[in-house]
Image 1 (tube, rainbow, N blue to C red):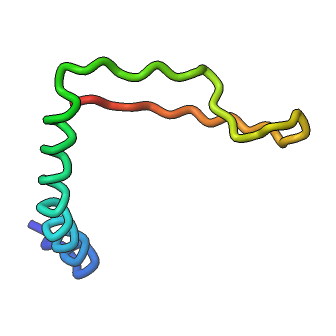
Image 2: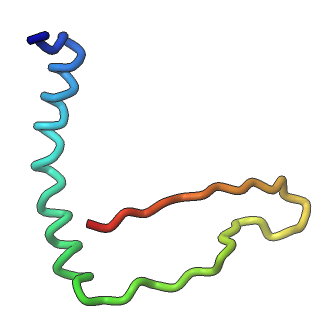
Length: 65
């Protein structure tokens, strides 16, 4: 078996420290949103107030567990 190198161990340790700090926030979010419908948004979200802005398109995929 190949053992993890030092950068891998550091990354694992960082995740171990980070995840517990996110749990309370995630549980609070679940408590507020369980059973609630998702907010409907426009197909195009833009901060441009004129037609002279450079156009850019980005796709995003949201996963719900």
